Amino acid sequence: MVRIISALILAVTAICATAAEPLQLVDNPPDRHVVVKGDTLWGISGKFLKEPWRWPEIWNMNRDEIKNPHLIYPGEIIYLDRSGAKPRLRKGKPLGTTSGDGVVKLSPHIYSTSTDAISSIPSNVIEPFLSQPLVVEPGQLDNVPRIIATPENRSMIAVGDQAFTTLIPDASIKRWNVFRPGKQLTDPDTGELLGYEAFFLGNANLVQPGEPAVLQVTVAKEEMLRGDRLLPAPPPNIISYVPHRPESTIAAKIISIYGGVYETGRGYIVTLNRGRNDGLDVGTVLAIFRNRVSVGFDENVRLEEVPIPEERYGLIFVFRVFDRVSYALVLDSSKGVVIGDSARNP
Image 1 (cartoon, helix red, strand yellow):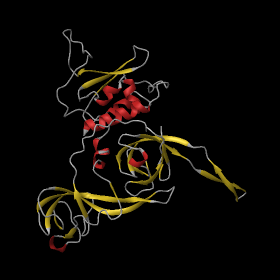
Image 2 (cartoon, one colour; image 1 turned 90 degrees about the vertical axis):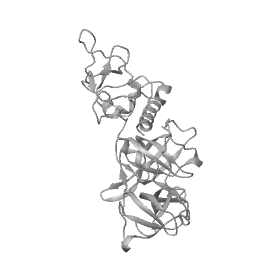
Image 3 (cartoon, rainbow, N blue to C red; image 1 turned 180 degrees about the horizontal axis):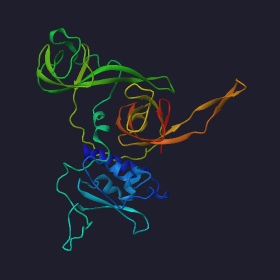
Image 4 (tube, rainbow, N blue to C red; image 1 turned 30 degrees about the vertical axis):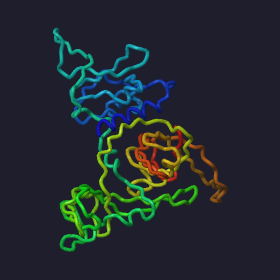
């Protein structure tokens, strides 16, 4: 998962950066940084760059390298090289590696394992959303297994509890995701019903098939109730994200913010009213825009609505795509992201 996220952020930032715009270093950047556990590539870049999302440029990475990025480990040294026309970040040997004369040498070093490599951003930012949230068509959850009973007639089920369900006659599927039918998603432009957002509740493992089947709850983000639905848990979604500009013109709007809030910011999930049928795919990068009107007043008398110039204020990347709806992570934002904002080609 760390490799997925590293490739994702690397590629997003490299593709969206404009070569004509010179990199800007922060005031008085350090000459070097010693990587410690808990560092992220984004955070390290912020020590050198005013725009840390452009850090693949300062590493001078080509497209092939973006697909298979450098691995960086605690103890290594990241140093700033200003000897050329453009500043560059380079990686040195682990802290304490010296030459014969006792001087620390900052030469390239390759590791054989990746278990301790740092990620681009904290992995929990996107990992929980790779298998959920889920968009379903009307009626799609009607004929799937559902919880019909709880131990000792409890009203709610939590981690470690057992749940009794219908429609699991055999043991061919062991791991299940638990959902609750959620709010409807409507296209603000056409009023068309795009689907329903199924609210992810947690995971359960099959203990015994049958009618009813017995499952044990292993993860519970919310309490589970009678009537909640189950779908097979997908296998680990090892996708090599290669973010890119859309191949066609995209004009989308943010129709929902995951979690039921009206406004959000960087690192959060938004829902778009465009999907696979509109040319979006996993890795599509979009810019977000604010386009509002202001009502003028003269001595407390309402005049007319005045259009305010559209403002581009951030970037998002799409990581889950359904036929008519997509989910995207807010990669960068200079202001609060609100429902109704536009998302278009960067």
